[in-house]
Length: 340
Image 1 (cartoon, one colour):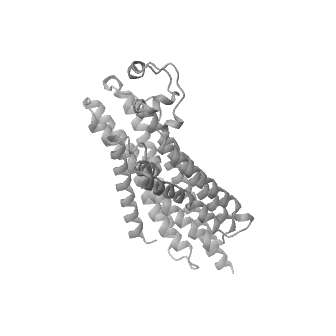
Image 2 (cartoon, rainbow, N blue to C red; image 1 turned 180 degrees about the vertical axis):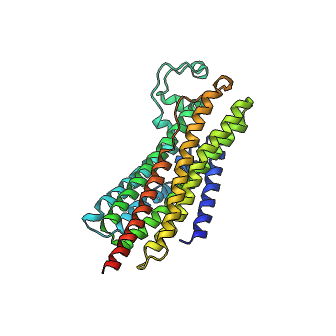
Image 3 (tube, rainbow, N blue to C red; image 1 turned 90 degrees about the vertical axis):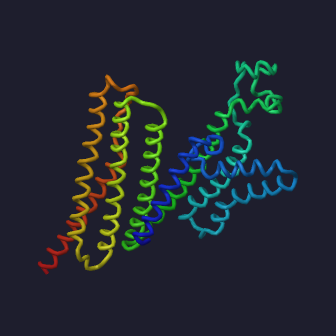
């Protein structure tokens, strides 16, 4: 993937995440959670289609089964063998999870908590006292609990993505165990591409949520100022992560060459940005918590958790160590050449 293609992909990811966050705020019944996308919308479409008649219901069932069968079809096309068995098993499980999750999204009332002796006024006026009474759903009173449906759909979507991530990790483990040097460098470059997209999505999510929180309600000047500073402290590590990834990709391109010309300069650039990122990230984290204590008397909302960007710090440290190892390896090779 070329750098310009990666940047365009990151931009599209940021735009999509921003759009989804806004939709979850304004249309919670259709977009309950980012984790439920796009399965929640597929389930909503299937539910609408199934109510249009027998033909529509048949099409809905066919689409439901067809979408659910996609991972299983991929598993059937896999190369047979013990090394791919965990991946194929994960794909079959993913098909089953999608099948059940889509059904649950279309019929969330089947998974609603069994609560007895409800005190909802509408429920009491109807003469029904138990949410498990079938008449409760026939009467349409289940619409009194839309929050349950949204939570259920979000949980089902999260289950699907959890199994999908399991499959991807199992595949990654196999590739890393069997790859040679050239393949490992290629895999590492692709992993950096994926991380770049993920960090971009996380930054867009944090920025959009923070901007909505800052502009959505009237706040005191201290709350607004501190909220803006905390939002900046959350975004800065992601910005450094993206810069580090772009420089690390260039470094990997040099490391893959036999001569490795310019690797010392490239590793030096990566090392410097990593050190700078670590210092700024930890300084902003400390400043954010100290500033909250200093402004506590004027703040209406105080966070009792210490927010430390552990993932960004760990990622930066690993890239720093990797760049230093490459530099030391190059020096060793040069020393051995001189000795010979």
